[in-house]
View 1 (cartoon, helix red, strand yellow):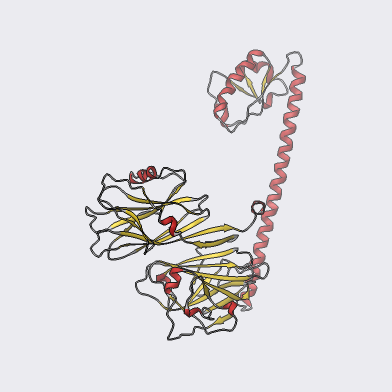
View 2 (tube, rainbow, N blue to C red):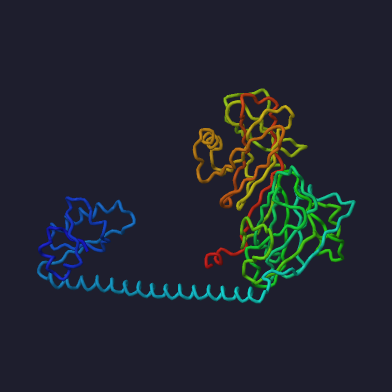
Length: 479
C-alpha cells in the first residue's frame, strides 16, 4: 500500500504500518523497483493530493491498472486502518495459499512425469534384452524392369505419383522406395508426403535433394509409428527442378486400387505399383532400426497438403512493375503462350519485375520454379520471387528491396539466385509460416555485370504447395 510522506506520522503507528511504502511526490518513483502497489491510503487531504500526483507517473507503465486512493477519516483512523489491513492481508493470504497448492501439484506432476519416462526406458530395455526388433518389415514389392519402360522422371516434374499402402496404418513406422537410375547432373529435390486417405490429414513431408538419393532402396522414417485407429496411408511423390532420379516400378497386379496413379496418363503406370517396402514398429514410438534413413523435413500432422499450379489465364495478365531508369525498345516482361513461361529480361540498372495478381492462395507454404537464360550467349543475371499482399504498393516494396532495406512482415522474398546461360537454376521458396491470405506473386531479375546482352531470362514450371487445416477451429483451440 502507498502513502504520502505527509501522512507518515499518522499512519506509521497504525495497523497498516507494516504494509505501507511512503513516497515523496517530489522525488523519482524509485519504489517501483521492489513494490507492486495495490491501493493508496491518505490520512489528510494534502496527503491524498500528493499521492495522486505521484501516481500519475505510473501512467507510463501500461501494464499496471489504475491505483485507487482511499481517504481514511482522522476520527476513526485506527479502526479504518485495521479494517483495511484485514482486507489486504486476507486477500494476500488466499493468494499465497493458492500458489502453494499450485506449486505442490506441479511438483507431483513432475514426479509422475519422471516415473512415466522411467517406465518407458524400462520397457525399451526389456525389448532390447529379449532381442525384439522394434522395426520389422511387413510388406515388400520388388522392382521389375521392363525394357519398354519410358521412365517416370518427366511425370514427377509435371504431376505427382500416388501410391496407396496395402496395409493398415496402425504401427507403420517407415517405408522404402527403390530407385533404378540416378542422374549425375541432377539439381533439384524430391517432394515426398504421406497422409491418411479417409481424412486427408498429413503425417510428414520429406524434401530430398537428388544428390542424396542412392541407387537401390532408400529408407524413409516417420517421426513416430502410427497409432490410433486403423486407416489407409497414401504416398505422394513429385519433383522440382533438373532431372529427378528414376523410380522403380513393380510387377503388374490385379487390384487396380493399389496400382500407382497420377493426374496425367502414363503408359508405365498400367496396373503397376511402385517398388516399395513397409515397416512397422511400436505404435507411438520413434523408430530407430532403419539404416540410412531420410527423416521428415516437416511435420504436417492435422493438415492436408495440396499441390497447385498457376492458371494460364492469370499468368497471361502479368503486369510490368519494373523499377529502372532505362526504357528499352523491347518488352522486358511478358508471357510466352506456347511455353507457359514468364520472360523477365534484366536491365543494366534497377530491377526488372513482373507481378501476377491474386495467384497465391491462403495457406501456401512452398513455391518452386525453374529459371533459364534462353540464349547461349546470354549474360549472367540473378533472379528471385516475392510475395506481397493485395493492398501493398508493389513498386514501393521493390524500391525497399533495391535499397537494401527490410521488407515489412507481410511480404516475403526468396532471396537472389545467380543464373548463367550454361546452367538453369531451380528456385525453392519455403515460407516460415503459411501465407495467411491471398497474395500477389512478383518475379524479379537484375543484372550482375555491366552487360545484359541476350539475357532472355525465362521463369516457368511454377509449383505451389498449400496446407489445408482438417480439424475444426474449436477442436484445435481445445487441444
